[in-house]
Every structure is written in C-alpha cells, then in structure tokens.
Amino acid sequence: SELPSPSLSEMQLVLGEALLIILLRCTPAGQPLKIVTCNVAPCCVETVGEGRMELGFEPVNTPASSFAVVQFEEANDEARAYMMSMLEQFQSPSGVVLFTLSLLITRGIECIKEDMDDPSTTLIGQFGHCSQELLNLLLCGAASSNVFDGSIPMGDTGLTLRGIPHQSKVGYLTHLEALRYCAVGSYFKTPADPVWVVGSSSHFTVLFAVDKAPVTESKFDKLLARVQRAFKASDPGETTMIENALLANVLQALATDDGVAEDHPEIVALANDPASVSALTTTLDKMGGHILWTDFWVAVSRLMTGASLDSVMMGEAGTLNMDDANAMGAQGTAGTGTGTGGNRPRSDSDIARELQAEFDGGGADNAMLTTGTSSASTGVAATSAGAAPAAPAVDPAHLSSMMDMGLEESWCRLALRRCNNDPQAAISFCFENDMAVLVSMEPPEPTPPPPAATQPHVTTTEAGAGAAAETEALPAGGPGTLHRFDSMAKEGDDQFTLYHYNGLTNANRSARMVRFKLTKRSAENMVGSAIPLSSDPSSGGPGGDPIEEVLRTRWPGSLLDWSGEKPPSID
Image (cartoon, rainbow, N blue to C red; front, side, top):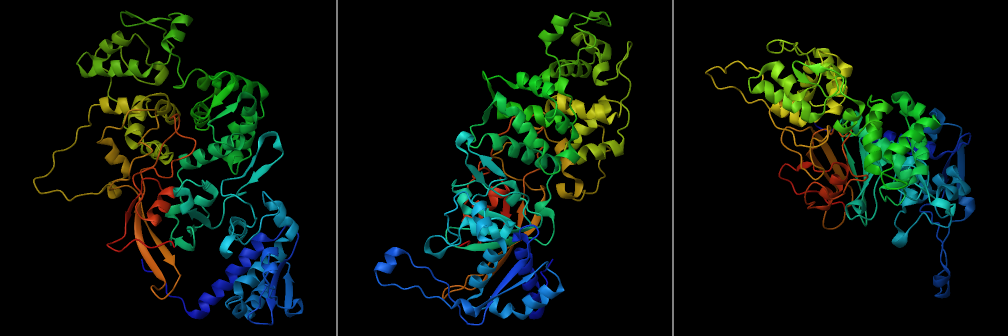
C-alpha cells in the first residue's frame, strides 16, 4: 500500500507530539518535563578544551538570560499547545541544541551520570557526533552506554555495564554489529513499534514499516530471547559457560524477566525452590563445576514448554536410555517376545524399528516383537492380533493450537494420530522424539488423483508453510531443528514490506525513500536443540551493501527485493 501524504500542518503536529513523548520518556518518576527555548536565533552553547584555549580559541555562548525553561507535570494539552507555539525554534538551525538542553534539564545531570558506565563520558562524541549515551537517552529514556539487554555486573569489581533496561518503543540497528564491534540486544532489535534508527559510521537513517509484521515474534523467539538475557547476565564475557553456583542467579533473572511470571509460572516456582535448583545443577554439571549454555538451554527450554523437571533430569530426550531401563529390570512382555521394561518410554530407534516393521508388512504384532516394548507410554495404539487399527482423524482445534506454538504441521499431525488426539501427550511426543525421522518414515496419506486440467500453482504463503514442510524431509537434528543458523530464506517464507529513508542532502544527492520487501527465514522451533548463545551477525550468506548487512543482523538469512532499484545508502 502507498504511504499517506499528510499536510504540512499534520506533520508539524506529529513532530511536536513526538518531541513531547521523547521528553516524557526521559522524565524521572515524580518530576516534571521541561522545555528549553531561546529568544536569540541562532543560539550557541560551546565549550572549548584547554588545548584550543591555548591556541586563542574562545567559547561562543548565548547569554543565559536569553534562555527560558518551562515545565509541565505531564504531556497534556497545555504542553502540546506550548510546544506547537515554539516548534519553529526546534526546526531552526539551533533546534538540535535546544532539544538536547531540554533533555538534559528534564533528565537531570546527576541522573544522566548515573545512567552511564563512566560518569565522565560526554554526550557529544568526536567530530560532533552523537554518542551512544545520547542516542539511548533519546530512544529509551536513559543515557546508558551499551546496546545489549539489561545490565551486566562485572564480577567482583563492583562495576556494572548498563544496557537497555526494557523493550524500546523505537528500535536501533547499527552497521557496527555487522562489523562485529557490538551486539544489539532484542530490546532494540524488536521494538514495540516497527521503527528503527539505523546507525552507520557517520550518519543515522530510518527504517520503518506500516504494520506490525516485522516486530511480531513467535513464542519460541520470545522464549529464546528471555533465556539468553538471563544467561548472559551471569556470563558477561559470553564464554558460554557459568559456574554451578551461578545457576540460581540465572534462574532468578529468568523468573523476573518481563512477562515470565505470567507466561511461565513453573520457572518462578523452580527458581524459588532451592532443592529443585540443586537437583538441576547436579544434572547440568558436565564440566566439573561448570554449566554449558547449550545444556542449560536444552533443559530450560523444555521446562518452559511443559516438560517436568523429572523428565528433564532423566535425559536430553526426556526418556530413560536403554541402560537405565535394564538396570530397573524387565517388566512384562509384548506378544510372544520378552520385554525390556513394559513401562519404559520408547526411544527414537524403538519407534523407528516398529514403524519399519509395519511398513515391511509385518503388522503391529511383528513390530511389537521387534522392539519388545509397550506402546502405552506414548499413546501409540496396537492390537494383539492382526494389523494396528486405523489412526483417528486429527482434531483441527488441537492441530491449530499446537501449530500456534511454532510446531511444524506435519509433526503435529503425526503426534496427534499417535497419541489419539491427546494434545498434551502429542506436544510431549514432539519434544521427546526425533520428529524428522518419524515424519520421513510415515507413509504418505492417500490423495485424490488430480483432474485432467492443469492445476493452478499455489504458493507456500497461500497454502501455509506447514503444508509445504510435510512434503519435504526435515533435516536431522534435535526436535526443534528446522534449519541451520547460516541458512537463507526461501520462496514461500514470510515476507513483509519495509521502507528506508535517508534525509541527508548535498550537492550530489537528495533525500531518498526506498520501499522494498524482505523475506525472513522460516519460524524456528528451537526447544531442546543445541543453539549458539549469540547469533553470528554475518550468518545467512554474504552481506553485500551495508544496508543489507545491517538488515541481516536483525533478520539473519533474509532475502531482499529492491524491485530493481539500487540499495539505499546508510551514510
């Protein structure tokens, strides 16, 4: 859809409102917001270092008596009317100076120093550039010095590195991340509104969308971001491991993360139960007093998606291995074969052998003789005579609810059939078995023959990503691995429209707005899969233009369609 074409008065009204919102965001609790104006145009506030003073430079300052400070308890109609009456000053050559002074007076000098890692830091950097502290003050209301999520204590030094305290209303992406100088956190990468400031080495531009598609996260994306934040708070150097004693801190950080108490009360209960924390610590300690990120993620991601602590401590797949089962002793038989434990949950290989036996024509009896296990623990129906009964029809409501969790449609259908439409059992079935293997061995469902006429082509977007996934063999790996982290998006994956605006003008170019389409990789179900603590900013193929490199720090492996235009400049 085309962008609206507002009138000049409408744009000025929105600009005034935006300035008030920024000031209100910076205002400490219980304090008024303050607007600084000046009756001299242009005004100047200059400081000169000692070196320049020795060379004869003198600071040029507008007299303090020329400035006025007006304060308001809130961004009410009175404040809006005053801002509109003074908007001309903020659009003048002195406008940036006046608004920066308004930020300083509103936030307070001491409060700004407390926001910073180093209180001696300046808000104006080298060559007059905006510092990260000033940018963060504008975007999230605090002059923090970093772009990662939350704050990171530096061991016993007493120092704390301060990042973004909460999800920002407006986001931030930077070419410095593509160059591996920093790592922007999810609070900036996934803002509340689809608007991002894009930073380069010398300039700021704007990226935005007119709908929420670019900032809509799957449940698994949110889960991963929360767990990563909690782990990194105790692993500031991103060594991908923590000492055992820090597990309690990580779980507490996770339990107090935004929304976790409402979405995952089981984590809050675990974090506040010392006995359970101790038991989980013992389970995850595979490095002589240290816990690896991958082990922590595999366990906690399963806990946050319905698995019990007992099942997690029994093994990565949530089932007893063969040695454990044998140690417990055999319990019963199946058919004429001797069982290896009638109540033992079956392993992936057990299920694969059973299915293969069925496909080879042996029926359910032969399959049970091959594996020697009971199907009751996983809800797979089998009879003592003849072939297995027909699988029940999949319940559409249960199928939809499981797919809303990010699970592949083919996985959901198979699990629901095997678990007699029990959704909880089906979810556990997906997490506790290698669904890629099972789906690849499942006989295809009969389909009616196509009519003689040529069928119209239906894209994956029209038919649903899950339908396409059913016809392809999923890559081997953990129960949530749908693609490699260096893979690229493909035709049919989710696509949305973005706009990039560079307002810099000079003798060689004018302001430029570029509309383009971005196709992101398929949704990731990463529960129970070993994944990196931080994504590689260069993942998903070569970057090319700087704007493409920046976009792939937010959407790795994305495909970009510039509609034949030259990619825009971020400088």
